[in-house]
Image 1 (cartoon, rainbow, N blue to C red):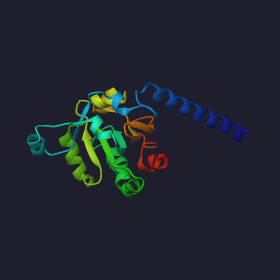
Image 2 (cartoon, rainbow, N blue to C red; image 1 turned 135 degrees about the vertical axis):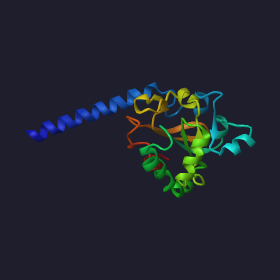
Image 3 (cartoon, rainbow, N blue to C red; image 1 turned 45 degrees about the horizontal axis):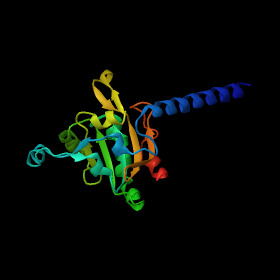
Image 4 (cartoon, rainbow, N blue to C red; image 1 turned 30 degrees about the horizontal axis):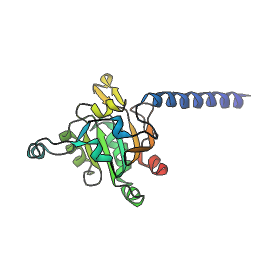
Length: 198
């Protein structure tokens, strides 16, 4: 009898989790089948670089269209550089699987966060990942806001940030899309999950 009660409780929790995930995702402007470029019209990101590189490039940006059009891209977003799960689990899951992504024909693996490109650059260097993954700053959060993936993390003293998420995008079209239940979770947005979805 106790086993049946546990099974029913577990089934109820799983149903609620699944429904909550579906409801949350239905509010994002990006989903499987959508065009990520159309979802973020006119938005640009800032490639990770040093301050001096920023000055010499006149603080150039890269349009979302240029990032995705005609390419197979795996992109993952995270709450912020130098934060725990992001540094210890999320980025490392992609760096250690980069050869598997290349074998599947992926042109770019991109990490994006609501940070300036100079912080992203220093963080990428610290993680020894700059030569493996492309890092971009979404300095004002406009990319994540356009995708409805912004998240207020003021309670953790981080201010406006983003959800933890991942996507597989082909020529701008979203083929796979994953969002964690909470920014501190690391269950569906890691490299191992998206590799199975490609």
